[in-house]
Length: 217
DNA sequence: CACTCGATGTTCT
DNA sequence: GAACATCGAGTGG
Image 1: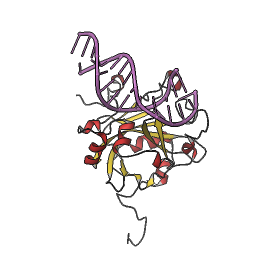
Image 2: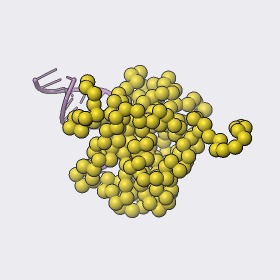
Image 3: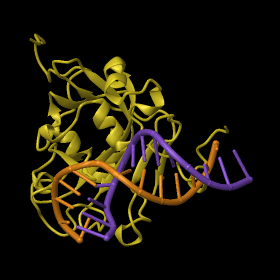
Image 4: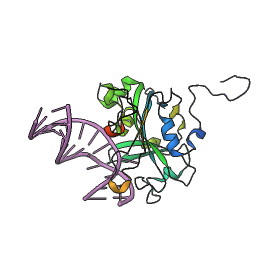
């Protein structure tokens, strides 16, 4: 146990606290970049540096909650720090983290991470060796880190799935339209956040949005 | 190398 | 039928 005499007993490897998530969803989406997603389990631990997120907001036609509460999206209404895992196309899983207080359905989709721990395990689960193919997509990272519906409605502030402080955003952050949404789903809203220099993005940042902050290839 | 297409199960749009 | 995705096969520069 921690034996410090006074003050908060937090250290670099402690999960980020609930207060981190209980803020404006766009702010949290940006600030998750550069933090580390950790998955602990008996088979071994895996970890990834968060490099890409997307915000899904209230009255957002792209959100699963845009037409109200259903059995699937109910974790989105369950308060800050709630894990929302959904199955897409019946076969893949995507990881979201809820931000707003209970009753307000906003969440952040984790779209890509950079592998930083448990690489052997990730390669096994993904059936691939190339680092860039392990976690460069929302359903790739859940496969690599063994994230499925068993974690749905869980708590992102404690094991077996949580976030710890990483280096944060050191390089430029790119803001772009979200991926995979139709014209009637807010396809143009700038709610995708990326570490612009990362090699592990799910898709390239649109060239039109990549100017100023890019040093030069 | 870029692009297209079909197939894969579950949920709700 | 389409969806916040991925993979592999096929086609064409």
